[in-house]
Image 1 (cartoon, rainbow, N blue to C red):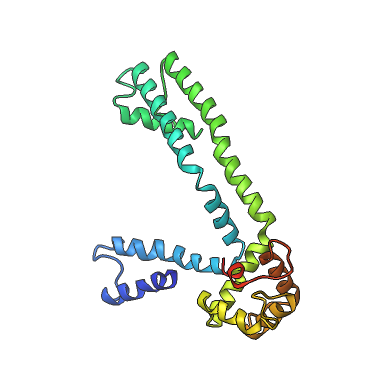
Image 2 (image 1 turned 45 degrees about the vertical axis):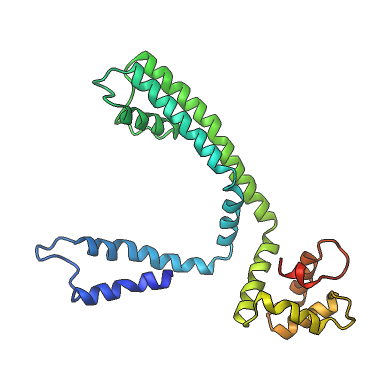
Length: 237
């Protein structure tokens, strides 16, 4: 998809006869799109070269379950802060609730643009409480994301090995529906499962391209119960 999007500007330039500027020399919206967004899309193509990028996505996928509740509470804190500022500040400083919410939000992020700030003692007190509370609260989601990334990083070899195996299987033309049939072929003792030797033979037949130690590591991952054998259900789970 990224490759298609990065190549789309060529069709736009052909349609515009390669004129990306207007007659007055001003960059048109299409010009801004092609000159500004397209280079970023082309840089995104490099992500396929960084296998560890998948670890970051995996960490966020683990943390995303807890984030909606935390973001909801963050929004409630922002509303409370904005409402308090709107009540205690004069209208010539904070004329409406939207400005109050903006001031509360930038204060909670400890950013503080300085375009809006309290001028009364009560408003300053509200901001101090808001900043202190938000700093303590922000540590919770950051801790969850950091812990998720730590768990993924400790398990990075297995995750990357699994992704590499799935990619090689798809490149070789195998799908999940083919695995049970392959297991039956290489199950020499007909016990419904493969031991390490049978599994090594099957992986070699599929030409996945994994080193022998990687094959052993993959087998140990699927053999979660330590029984010394795996069946097709364990392999495609």
